[in-house]
Image (cartoon, rainbow, N blue to C red; front, side, top):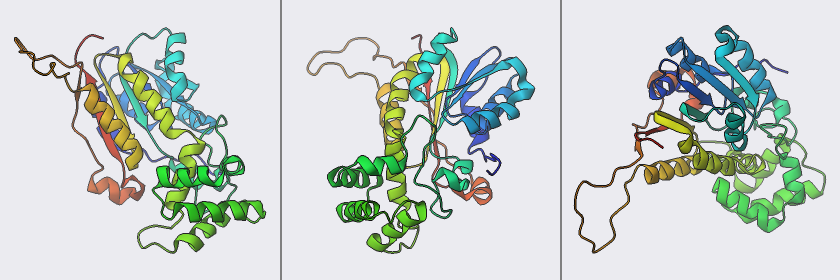
Length: 308
């Protein structure tokens, strides 16, 4: 098993958006290797951080990295769904910042046994944590119509039905149990692409559904804004259009004042909003040169400006 070596994306940009302050309480809901947590804790010697991740290996690696911060750090295994309950158990009512770095980490991609990689052959797994369903299990239970929907909705794959039929036929015949075999079916049906491997989007679609990534994100966006103290910031890094659209639309809704009823005269100051959007950030040229996997990353941040 390779070591858990994770390159933190938009590290300083996240810490700047969160802007740690004295005695602030911060939450990293996708701890990974602990890079964002380390950046936040390093900005102020008195702030505290609670870190969560679905992946036990990530938690262990982050624990080693964050050990110098002592009791300023508390870590636990949890998914997005569990974070509000975990904060309640920790008797934390409001926090000053929340970080979510979505998507797959480099150690997950680089470990063939995790089954995320198209390049490295491994089992049809792709689980981000032991609580998820493997891709192999997913393929065994989906009908052709359901798999077509998965490829079309979560991978924007065309022709989705032809690919779904070929994948299920190969699975039923016993000839598709590894990532290389699945990638070969995708290449046979979709042909070779110029910019990326033809299996990239089908793999993304299957991974998203197996790990309930968009459902997890929607539940985070439902719960996280209410957890922010005045001045607190929710910072989310997205990697593909489906999750970025969810974040962008939710942040726009939360930061837009309600319109007055049509036809009713408006007197006084316009209605205030509880939140404001901060400037979106993408990786610099220097970061992209050092880490090409950061090319699709986008940081969006939302700040509470009023008392909850």
